[in-house]
Image (cartoon, rainbow, N blue to C red; front, side, top):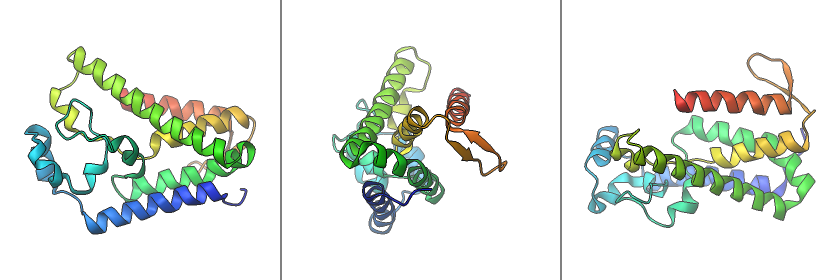
Length: 193
Protein backbone atom coordinates (compact mmCIF):
# COMPACT_ATOMS: atom_id res chain seq x y z
CA UNK A 1 0.00 0.00 0.00
CA UNK A 2 1.49 3.35 -1.04
CA UNK A 3 1.58 6.23 1.45
CA UNK A 4 -1.48 8.43 1.77
CA UNK A 5 -1.30 11.22 -0.79
CA UNK A 6 -2.19 14.83 -0.01
CA UNK A 7 -5.53 15.02 -1.81
CA UNK A 8 -6.68 11.69 -0.36
CA UNK A 9 -5.60 12.85 3.10
CA UNK A 10 -7.62 16.06 2.70
CA UNK A 11 -10.70 14.14 1.51
CA UNK A 12 -10.44 11.84 4.52
CA UNK A 13 -10.05 14.75 6.94
CA UNK A 14 -12.95 16.72 5.42
CA UNK A 15 -15.30 13.72 5.50
CA UNK A 16 -14.39 12.78 9.07
CA UNK A 17 -14.59 16.37 10.37
CA UNK A 18 -17.95 16.96 8.69
CA UNK A 19 -19.38 13.72 10.05
CA UNK A 20 -18.41 14.41 13.65
CA UNK A 21 -18.90 18.18 13.38
CA UNK A 22 -22.46 17.95 12.06
CA UNK A 23 -23.25 15.17 14.52
CA UNK A 24 -22.01 17.33 17.40
CA UNK A 25 -23.49 20.66 16.26
CA UNK A 26 -26.71 19.62 14.49
CA UNK A 27 -27.31 16.09 15.75
CA UNK A 28 -29.47 13.35 14.26
CA UNK A 29 -33.23 13.61 13.92
CA UNK A 30 -35.35 11.22 15.92
CA UNK A 31 -36.06 8.10 13.79
CA UNK A 32 -39.80 8.43 14.39
CA UNK A 33 -39.70 12.06 13.35
CA UNK A 34 -37.78 11.14 10.18
CA UNK A 35 -40.65 8.90 9.09
CA UNK A 36 -43.12 11.70 9.75
CA UNK A 37 -40.95 14.18 7.79
CA UNK A 38 -40.92 11.75 4.84
CA UNK A 39 -44.68 11.13 4.91
CA UNK A 40 -45.78 14.70 5.68
CA UNK A 41 -43.23 16.96 3.91
CA UNK A 42 -43.20 20.68 4.48
CA UNK A 43 -40.48 23.26 3.81
CA UNK A 44 -41.29 24.62 7.30
CA UNK A 45 -39.85 21.41 8.78
CA UNK A 46 -36.53 21.52 6.87
CA UNK A 47 -34.48 22.28 10.01
CA UNK A 48 -35.94 19.25 11.78
CA UNK A 49 -33.80 17.06 9.52
CA UNK A 50 -30.84 18.34 11.56
CA UNK A 51 -27.56 17.17 9.95
CA UNK A 52 -29.48 15.29 7.23
CA UNK A 53 -30.47 18.64 5.72
CA UNK A 54 -27.00 18.51 4.11
CA UNK A 55 -27.89 15.22 2.38
CA UNK A 56 -29.40 15.33 -1.12
CA UNK A 57 -33.15 15.38 -1.50
CA UNK A 58 -34.69 14.88 -4.94
CA UNK A 59 -35.42 18.26 -6.61
CA UNK A 60 -39.15 17.41 -6.45
CA UNK A 61 -38.98 17.31 -2.66
CA UNK A 62 -39.91 20.33 -0.56
CA UNK A 63 -36.66 19.66 1.34
CA UNK A 64 -34.37 20.10 -1.68
CA UNK A 65 -31.77 22.88 -1.47
CA UNK A 66 -29.16 23.59 -4.20
CA UNK A 67 -26.20 23.33 -1.79
CA UNK A 68 -27.07 19.65 -1.23
CA UNK A 69 -25.65 18.88 -4.69
CA UNK A 70 -22.18 19.24 -3.12
CA UNK A 71 -22.73 18.61 0.60
CA UNK A 72 -24.36 15.18 0.19
CA UNK A 73 -20.99 13.65 -0.84
CA UNK A 74 -19.51 14.54 2.55
CA UNK A 75 -22.37 13.28 4.73
CA UNK A 76 -22.63 9.73 6.08
CA UNK A 77 -25.50 7.94 7.78
CA UNK A 78 -23.49 6.37 10.59
CA UNK A 79 -19.96 5.55 11.71
CA UNK A 80 -19.90 2.25 9.78
CA UNK A 81 -20.91 4.01 6.56
CA UNK A 82 -18.17 6.59 7.16
CA UNK A 83 -15.54 3.96 8.01
CA UNK A 84 -16.05 1.80 4.93
CA UNK A 85 -16.18 4.76 2.54
CA UNK A 86 -13.02 6.26 4.04
CA UNK A 87 -11.30 2.87 4.03
CA UNK A 88 -12.08 2.52 0.31
CA UNK A 89 -10.79 6.03 -0.46
CA UNK A 90 -7.66 5.27 1.59
CA UNK A 91 -7.06 1.98 -0.26
CA UNK A 92 -7.82 2.98 -3.85
CA UNK A 93 -7.24 6.75 -3.91
CA UNK A 94 -3.45 7.05 -3.49
CA UNK A 95 -2.44 4.91 -6.50
CA UNK A 96 -4.82 6.89 -8.71
CA UNK A 97 -3.64 10.24 -7.34
CA UNK A 98 -0.01 9.24 -7.93
CA UNK A 99 -0.89 8.07 -11.46
CA UNK A 100 -3.01 11.08 -12.47
CA UNK A 101 -1.72 13.83 -10.20
CA UNK A 102 -3.76 15.69 -7.56
CA UNK A 103 -5.77 17.97 -9.86
CA UNK A 104 -6.92 15.25 -12.25
CA UNK A 105 -7.59 12.86 -9.36
CA UNK A 106 -9.80 15.38 -7.54
CA UNK A 107 -11.64 16.21 -10.77
CA UNK A 108 -12.26 12.50 -11.36
CA UNK A 109 -13.43 12.05 -7.75
CA UNK A 110 -16.03 14.82 -8.06
CA UNK A 111 -17.14 13.78 -11.56
CA UNK A 112 -17.74 10.26 -10.20
CA UNK A 113 -19.67 11.65 -7.22
CA UNK A 114 -21.79 13.96 -9.37
CA UNK A 115 -22.28 11.18 -11.92
CA UNK A 116 -23.59 8.87 -9.19
CA UNK A 117 -25.93 11.64 -8.06
CA UNK A 118 -27.21 12.16 -11.62
CA UNK A 119 -27.76 8.42 -12.03
CA UNK A 120 -29.63 8.27 -8.71
CA UNK A 121 -31.86 11.18 -9.74
CA UNK A 122 -32.50 9.66 -13.18
CA UNK A 123 -33.48 6.30 -11.69
CA UNK A 124 -35.72 8.05 -9.15
CA UNK A 125 -37.38 10.06 -11.94
CA UNK A 126 -37.98 6.94 -14.06
CA UNK A 127 -39.37 5.04 -11.08
CA UNK A 128 -41.70 7.89 -10.19
CA UNK A 129 -42.80 8.29 -13.80
CA UNK A 130 -43.53 4.57 -14.03
CA UNK A 131 -45.21 4.54 -10.60
CA UNK A 132 -42.67 1.94 -9.43
CA UNK A 133 -42.06 3.71 -6.09
CA UNK A 134 -44.06 5.59 -3.52
CA UNK A 135 -44.14 9.33 -4.39
CA UNK A 136 -43.01 10.03 -0.82
CA UNK A 137 -39.62 8.46 -1.66
CA UNK A 138 -38.57 11.87 -3.04
CA UNK A 139 -38.30 12.87 0.62
CA UNK A 140 -35.73 10.17 1.43
CA UNK A 141 -32.25 11.73 1.34
CA UNK A 142 -29.19 10.42 -0.52
CA UNK A 143 -25.88 10.80 1.26
CA UNK A 144 -22.31 9.59 1.33
CA UNK A 145 -19.16 9.27 -0.72
CA UNK A 146 -20.19 5.87 -2.08
CA UNK A 147 -20.72 7.11 -5.64
CA UNK A 148 -17.33 8.81 -5.73
CA UNK A 149 -15.77 5.72 -4.15
CA UNK A 150 -17.34 3.45 -6.77
CA UNK A 151 -15.80 5.73 -9.39
CA UNK A 152 -12.40 5.28 -7.72
CA UNK A 153 -12.89 1.51 -7.76
CA UNK A 154 -13.73 1.58 -11.47
CA UNK A 155 -10.75 3.85 -12.18
CA UNK A 156 -8.44 1.58 -10.19
CA UNK A 157 -9.68 -1.51 -12.06
CA UNK A 158 -9.15 0.23 -15.41
CA UNK A 159 -5.67 1.55 -14.60
CA UNK A 160 -4.43 -1.43 -12.57
CA UNK A 161 -6.59 -4.39 -13.75
CA UNK A 162 -4.08 -7.09 -12.79
CA UNK A 163 -3.31 -5.64 -9.34
CA UNK A 164 -4.20 -8.17 -6.67
CA UNK A 165 -6.42 -7.07 -3.79
CA UNK A 166 -6.58 -9.10 -0.61
CA UNK A 167 -10.19 -9.51 0.48
CA UNK A 168 -10.94 -9.22 4.18
CA UNK A 169 -13.54 -12.01 4.24
CA UNK A 170 -12.53 -14.52 3.01
CA UNK A 171 -8.83 -13.54 3.03
CA UNK A 172 -8.02 -14.42 -0.57
CA UNK A 173 -6.32 -12.34 -3.29
CA UNK A 174 -8.38 -11.30 -6.31
CA UNK A 175 -7.48 -9.19 -9.35
CA UNK A 176 -8.85 -5.65 -9.32
CA UNK A 177 -10.86 -6.13 -12.52
CA UNK A 178 -12.71 -9.11 -11.02
CA UNK A 179 -13.16 -7.47 -7.63
CA UNK A 180 -14.90 -4.44 -9.14
CA UNK A 181 -17.10 -6.57 -11.42
CA UNK A 182 -18.20 -8.80 -8.52
CA UNK A 183 -18.74 -5.81 -6.24
CA UNK A 184 -20.82 -4.04 -8.92
CA UNK A 185 -22.94 -7.16 -9.43
CA UNK A 186 -23.57 -7.46 -5.68
CA UNK A 187 -24.50 -3.77 -5.40
CA UNK A 188 -26.84 -4.02 -8.39
CA UNK A 189 -28.50 -7.11 -6.94
CA UNK A 190 -28.93 -5.46 -3.53
CA UNK A 191 -30.21 -2.27 -5.14
CA UNK A 192 -32.83 -4.10 -7.18
CA UNK A 193 -33.77 -6.54 -4.43
